[in-house]
Length: 351
Image (cartoon, rainbow, N blue to C red; front, side):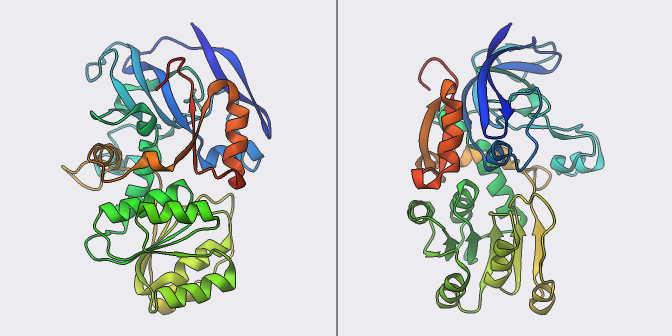
């Protein structure tokens, strides 16, 4: 069968065309997409900074409804609403068995190699499909993926009751990191934000104070807001050296810094700050499971949505139909539009 889907034509240009959609194979399901968020990585593809997927539909912040199932699928039923974790992994290697399936030697994102959520239909492994809890809309469930990213970083840093937390950046991941830190019981939370609408959203997410992002202004505001530094700082911006330096500057001596932002290549940094302050530096990549018997980051994201411990709907600023996928990316890339999270809605019926 075929369906409408977005494909990259060239940097700065996507178009909707009809593409073939295969039948689900063993262990797979076919999903009718309800919502798909435009991620920062999608904007890197859109701008040409990163090589876009070739001959595959992009979009990895996806929710939808199970339409059909392949042989051997018993965990899902036709009509089930699901949020999709876009990783394939073997489930048998040392990393998978230890809860770090994000580090599977044979794993990785299947979206990009295979079709993703900027289309009406997609195929996904049943094991990657998390049932959406009652009370969570498909639109909200599309943000299970970025919330799981933020939760993974917060758990990596062992954020708990009373710890002070800084978040560098107030895009989607930064805002969700603020919300996740608040849900995890953090004490004081300080975030940096470039735009007024992001600063407002950060306060709504749970930040107690907002810092500007510009060099000297950031330094002086940080010294006033958190003299001595913060217990944990999460860097969510990526791209260059400045947010990395800001994150390390915000951390207290013997504090923890988590690097979460996306970097297109190597950057320059001064390791003396790490050495002199004896910082604990942690990398955080996608999502995993923190230990035996504990809920995965993705499951916890959906649970927190259902319990209203995190309000993801508040950061959705634009909803755009699939036919306007070009406009969706242009809005997301232009922060003067007031955009935070743009959700593309391929379904014909309202979600």
